Figure 1 (spheres, rainbow, N blue to C red):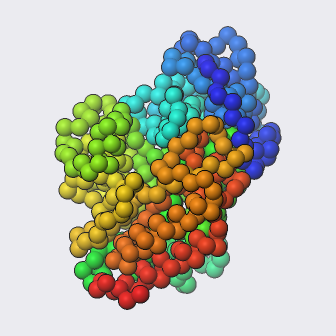
Figure 2 (cartoon, rainbow, N blue to C red):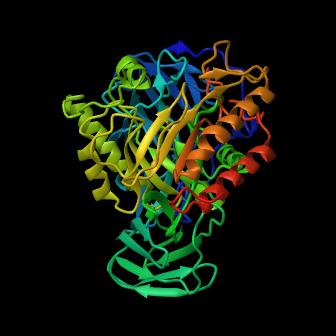
Length: 581
């Protein structure tokens, strides 16, 4: 193991996480029960080269923060051949188990094997997606022991995103082990295992997995409307229709009760689609053209790396973006805990979600040549490794299934800048078969094949000269990246950005000029979405609107809100014939 480079930055809620049980909130707002024991907090911890249980656990780690992070209390990076070992005990309250006891994990990076009281009860091999095990038959009265063994060699065969052992530039500190909440949940034998929520602007279809065959009662919390049904699904129309938008993020909270189970959840009524305006294809929300004015969001924090100290970190990121006039975040090559998406649903922030890349990245092939204009190539023979392809496809399926119910998630990126790209047309068809209700950007940036819902471009180092077309909505899915270093709020001495400015005033002036001279004309031509790089600084990258420690907003909120309102007005006045602004 190696000591992580000393980092002194912390976000505003750092101290709040130094408690007995950090992140002690129910982890799944869309499938909430009254039975919940949070297992976050201090666990025994060890790193070894041996596969078996260590003879002693010589450290402690604060779960759910990865060992590389300051908040974990460990601040060490495992070597390639290291195993991470977590151990803790628990005692169940009397009468806690209804029929079955589930042990749930938000995410563990990457290959995890879970044992309870000496018996292996399950394993999982994805660093970003949740999993669980039924541990009913393995627990006993009194003290129980959980031992989790984790192996994370950062293999490029599996999704890893922006993590790198030798961090720097556009690559960030890697994470390992547990990085989301661990908890126990008691359920009846015929429990509701999952929901599938499919809305339109008029009604919503709710499908249950589990819950038994008897009568179910769905009650809308605000209105008190009751819908009774048998079987596994119901389609309902509320008396009052409130459509979800980032400006008015209305959520219908509801409960479902079966003969033995009760859960709390929510839905929203909304539709994302494509409409024609005078021959120009545009993205639409709830049947009307809508301009998505967004920011790239990497989801990294100096004290927790993959996780902020508390959910307030997510909430304040979202509210800061809204206060600057933005209505969308492109969640870049990372999947967040459910709480993040719930807050986007609740606070009103559209999410453009990336799949997590795997396979090796080539700067020359994937970035340098496309930036110079070489943006076309066939991907049918690319990345032939069968293990890598299957890992990506499995993760894509898992991502779409995990995020299906969140109304704020409107758009997916499958491949980003050619990194790991293979048979994009086939992957597009696969994704659309999983979820035909959302927009899929098959090849964000370049290396477009034949199939995609949008015409997606990344533009750095030169003027944006794309033109909306009659075939697909135009999305500038990355641009900008202007850098400004704020003394006292820097991760290190190195700097990474696309154009640097010495003062906040110069930065603000340059970004406003970019929007005024290059973005606004495209909005007037019918472009649908823009993603500026980026929401926050990340380690060496200092091209964020806010600093990495989330303590300084580099630009004027009022000025950028005014700019956003101007873009919105231009979009609303577009008529397909040049507009009339």
